[in-house]
Amino acid sequence: MKGAGWKAGGHVSLPRLAATHGFVLLLLPIPGLHLWHLWVQGLAGVLVLAAVVFALAWWVSKNRAERLQDELQQAQEEARAREKERDLAQGELLLRLDQERELNQQKMQLQAQLADYEKYAALAQMALGAAHEINNPLLGILSHLELELKTADTEAHSEIEQCIESAKRIAATTRGLLNYTRPDPMRVSRIQLGRLVAELLGFLQHQPMLRALRVENRVTSELPAIHADSQQLSQVLMNVLLNAAEATPAGGSIVVEAEHLPASESAEIRVIDSGAGIPADILPHVFEPFFTTKHGKGTGLGLSISQAYVRSHGGEIRLQSQEGAGTTVRITLPLRRQPESGVEEEKSEVVV
Image (cartoon, rainbow, N blue to C red; front, side):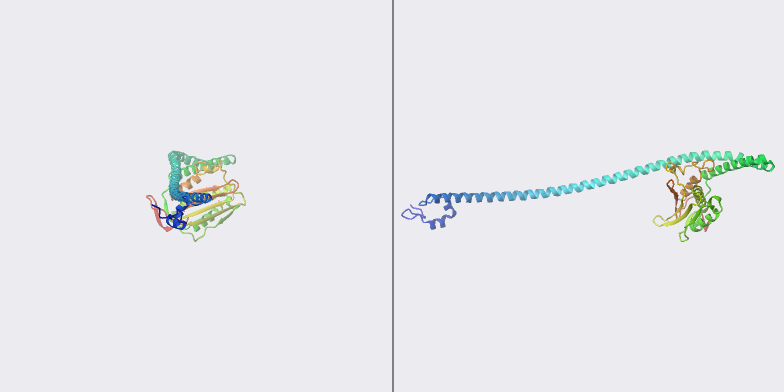
């Protein structure tokens, strides 16, 4: 039985074969074709096969590339998430380190303050006992020297005066000890800083050490009033001004300034001199009791007592100085103190 694509004489009908078998014509040998036709047929088959393989390979590669792209994107997202977590962990670690460093600093400051308080407490007890023991016989010595001075001849007169001056220095030292260890109760009143500074400078302008200096008052009357003990505040400013005058050579200047600090509801008083300044190795010790560079003149208690007075008001006193460039004393006081036991509140306004 002959196939449907063959004629009776065994010849091939190419159009009919192509219509029924499609591209298989390129892969099967066709009777009646020459050898070169077979070669072309084989080459075409190889090309078709290569195209199919290439298309299959491209499809596989595309799918694989898409899968790799998805995996890469997922890996990048995970990497970004881990990097964010790492940054957060590092930030938290740095924050904790800063907090720990700040706590250590506060701990060291509190330990230093505690050591100072213990030292001052022991010193206060010793000084209080010594002051009482010294004061009583000293009064008798001074009274006897003053009587001797009235009847002394010219030769002994100067020696007795020197003894009286020395005894008065001892009395001033013991009085400073008593003020430092057992200050009087605070009498808080409403104070205008401008008037207080003006009257204090008017009182001090006749002092010999201030006559050769230029003293300038820049404290204005617009500053808000503060609540403080006027006697203690006057004593603090007087100690600071006298120290500035002693450190400033003739022709120098002393400037008193003040300003309101709204952020902390406080007032800052500044005393600026053009004196010799304080060496860096001495500056940390200026508030220590009995520390003085004025050998034979000062007691070393002026700044210590001033610091105690300022701190009792809830304020702070600081020194900024450079050798050869003068000194600036900053006194910061709250505008209004918190009420405490043992503090008398006066309603009237007191200036000096």
